[in-house]
Image 1 (cartoon, helix red, strand yellow):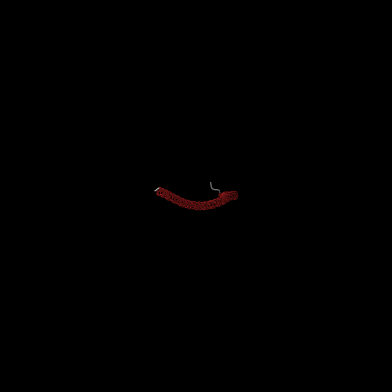
Image 2 (cartoon, rainbow, N blue to C red; image 1 turned 90 degrees about the horizontal axis):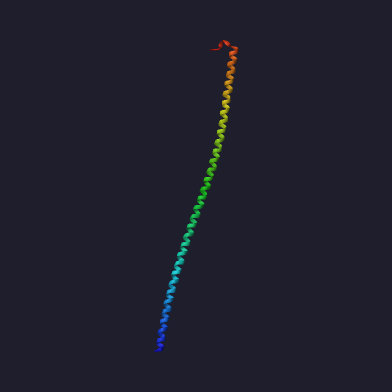
Length: 122
């Protein structure tokens, strides 16, 4: 009888141990599941980082393109200013020609009045 009691107690302890083992295995499975979820989040985060880096590179390319356009536009502005200066010189030359021609006409008129005073009209 005493032996049977020990056997029953031992079986009860064994069942308790088996129950603890099952609980521990359940906790291990939960932990493994959390690890897998964390790894999945890490992979998603890495993917977002890669996408962000790709967008940064694309933005840098757009910035470089815009800087080239700005430099081209500045070059065109400088060329335009040079053309304007050339046109202003042409205008000044033409104005000088007008002055020279006017003086020449005045000289001719003066010469005519001196040589042919009877042609003077009042």
